[in-house]
Amino acid sequence: MVKLADANGSTSFIVDYCAKAPSGSVIAIGTEINLINRMAHVHPDKKIFELSGNTCPVCANMYRTTLNDLAYTLENFGDIKPIKVNEPTRSEAKLALDKMLEIS
Image (tube, rainbow, N blue to C red; front, side):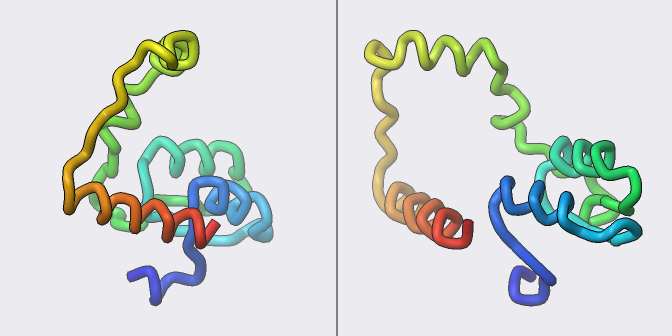
């Protein structure tokens, strides 16, 4: 799917792509629905919609994270126990993160 896309990248890439697209552009985005809705709202001169067209892609973990969670983490960073992820999940997740950072 990624190879067939006109463009692909991180969240900041998607935001920038939508901002730079000319008025009247039609942009199908394959990511979390809240970002898609925000881009459609910010750029009413463009038709921006979810790639699938039939579902509501929601990242449950992303959706649950609040500003209070972030504030707590920053204020208590030294006291929070690190999360340990076992192999092979750890190396596969790192590979995915490295690829995302490389693209952005």
